[in-house]
Amino acid sequence: MLSIIITITSLLLLWIILLFNKIIKQKNFVKEAWSGIDVQLKRRYNLIPNLVETVRAYTKYEGTVLEEITKIRQKCIDASSVKEQSEAEVTLSTGFKQFFALVERYPDLKANEQFINLQKNLIEIEDAIQYARRYYNGTVRDFNILAESFPSNIIALIFGYESRDYFEITLSIEREKVETDVRNEK
Image (cartoon, rainbow, N blue to C red; front, side, top):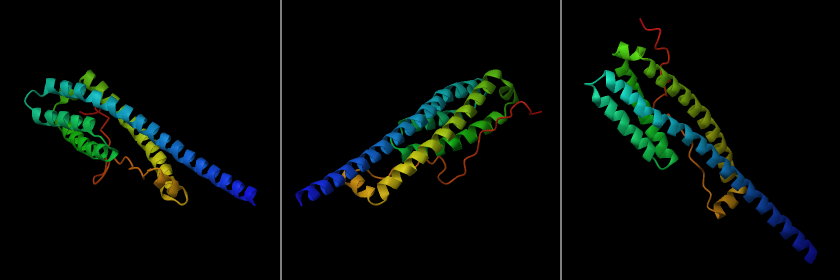
């Protein structure tokens, strides 16, 4: 009788350990995925000052939009949670629309080689952010399934693991891709 109790207890303990390890593994996938997003966001944030300075050289009297982009960039850098980062990214998206609307008024700027290269880099980074975001959201989905479904939710609750937020760049507006074809303008 004692051996049956020991066997059942051992199997239960083994099952709990395996479930706990599965949750930890998925949590680490989420951290790794966020790191991928973070790298791409930093690349974009590092590109913004170069874009702003290039545009500023052509638009000496239009500082409002440029200052706003710089402030939004800082807000994005200072974001401390996934939700704050998502909200800041929506604001940055809106700022980029205004920024590129400003650029439209300066044909010489749109033909500037440095600006064209910066814009191409921005588009590549935007694509990389999109891929990283998809991977992150997939890992969050898998983690949330573990944290919310029975019986793993009991283990997650005991050890304080809660569902994670998805990284949604679009909250209330549809995200638009930056216009890439600057050479075909007449």
